[in-house]
Structure formats: C-alpha cells, structure tokens
Image 1: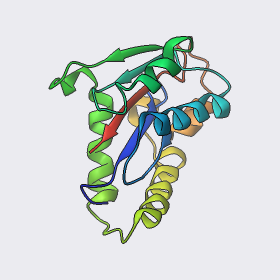
Image 2: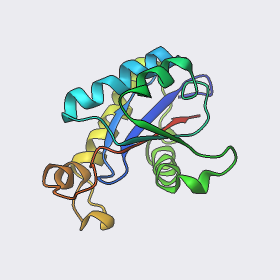
Image 3: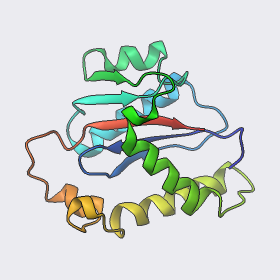
Image 4: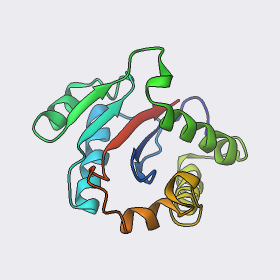
Length: 157
C-alpha cells in the first residue's frame, strides 16, 4: 500500500476484534458510512460509541448524520494519540506485520493480503488481555455487561 491508499479500521475496544476495514485509493464519508453500517448488520447491535481521530472522513457530515440517532461519537484531540492507545498499538502491528512486509501491486492485492491478515488476527492470534484467546473466540463467548461492539475507528495513513 502506498501513501495514496487509505484503510480505515474499525475495532471493538472490548473484544479487540477487527470489525471492519476497507482499502481504497480514496474514502469519502459516504464510503465510511457504508462500511460502518455493515458492522451492526453482522453483530446484531449498534456500537455504544464511535471513537475517532479527526480525519476528514470521520468528521464528515455523512458520518455525523449516520451516528446521530445510532451511537455517540467521541473524538480524540488532534495530536493526542494517547487518548486512543489501543488503535495506535493496533496500527503499529498492522504496519509491522503486514503493510511493510508487502509490496502491493494494486488495491485488489492489498485488500486480499490485508483481509487474510485480519482473519488471522481475529481467529488465530491469542491476546493476553483476553485470557490468551483470539478476539473472535472471546467475542463469541463474551458476557461482559459493556457493549462488546463499542468501536474505535480511525483512518490509517
């Protein structure tokens, strides 16, 4: 993936599961809304909150309108990545384990490789914070009272 490609990432803050992510040359607010709308269709519930950085897709009218009656939005302050440390750590892993190891010849190849990495991350990789279970396994058995679908969403650059 090169500097011209975008990849927003939606993760469950509680389950650490990657719930969504698209790869494209450009992503509009409407594109992001389409991606976000798929998550509750798959999970059966709306996230309690959408934690966002201040990328142009995330501060768009389309995203604000979509969130209005569905979920709260929590924006991290510009230049304060420590307000969303989980997604910062996740993006570091994504860069180190997938993006920098591959030279993608196009968006389609990037989608496939990143999708394969996402599947491995969700279903095969144990996380110490989840009792050494993969995120998808933990999410399937989650009975925690906090909404397991609370999202962190930020746009990878």
